[in-house]
Amino acid sequence: MENKKALKLIDKILTDLEKSGINTDTLIEDLKALRSYALEQQVPLVVKVLRLTYEHIEENDSFLIPIPDDEPIEEQENENEAPVKNEDVNPVESLMYLVSLFKDIKNKMNVMDLADYRDALNA
Image: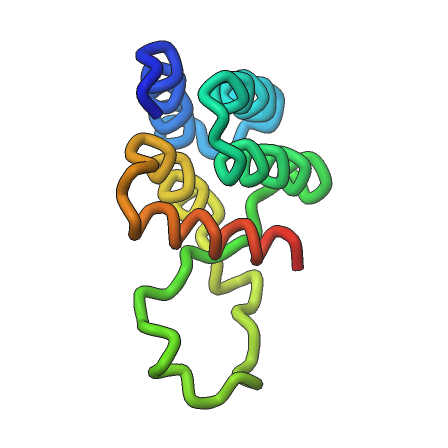
């Protein structure tokens, strides 16, 4: 995002996650505030991912979505692979990665990973 206040908020969220993990009270409010900046900048993917993220955290008191794979889709021969189990997910690490993607939404890889998060949150 290009808004300086939004970037400061992203840094605050990352710092809070690193220090105290997923504190749902402040985290959800910060994500909602960040979403308002995304609405102002008219970035629909970011708006949707942020909404799905805080709704997921409200529902689960954690972030149970794994970091998207870097492997190209062509290499995934078996589409019926076992889904990642929740114990394989590091909630703080995955959420920190997701939030860091919002810093540079012009990067195509970040946009692809955001789309992967969106799809996983919708599933």
